[in-house]
Image (cartoon, rainbow, N blue to C red; front, side, top):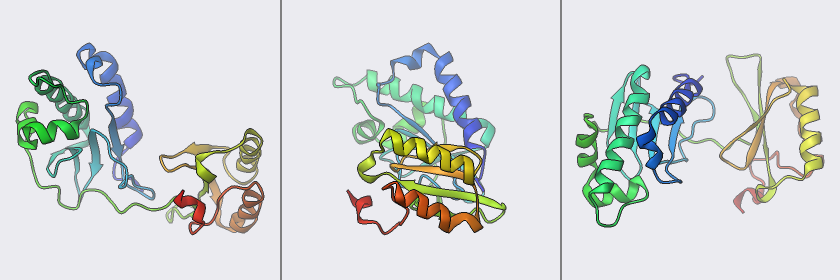
Amino acid sequence: SAAFDSHAVARDIESMLAEEPVLWALPSKFGILVDGGGALPLADITADIMVRSGEGATAVHLDGGTLAAFCAPSSLTEAAKAFALAFLRLSAQRSEKPRRTRALVMAVGEEAIFAEAGLIAHAPIGLGSEAKLPIGFISLGYRSRSAFGVGLPFGRIEADALNALADISERYGDGHVRTTPWRALLLTGIAAGDEDSLRDEVTALGLITDPADPRLNI
């Protein structure tokens, strides 16, 4: 259900970063986010450079900004590279070098970064999707099997519980346990008819299966 293959774009960006020694000078916490939308969009997650889906388009935009560069999926990696290089060049001109894009936007203005990157700035109409809490059964309507989100109390899980969760994933799903940015794990390949029994087993491990669980607020 994603608007584009975010995994492929992320791999391309990783390869680009590895092959461009000049970009190794980026600050250690500098991040690039790739959000293909779909059933669990990353609308509530930010990074220095963000690749997102929009209304019939894909775009790259900056943390702390309000503009976007619309690109074809095949051009997303080059746009991210252009922004990263612009960040390094403009930061080098400052007496106190910004460590994050948000700080550079505040210092020089978003338009200056777009100009340095050689990208055209547009208003990001309809960019991104509404965030959804990844806890409990997550229907992927066009598929016969879906996902089940398991919340980790206070962001932690004991080794025995993780081992049991892996066993549950093999019995109910496709054997995968996927990580998320929301202190939750996803079991994939789950049939709708197994939702209740799976929930009971996961709850018995002391993990969170109810999106209204108050522990999710801590």
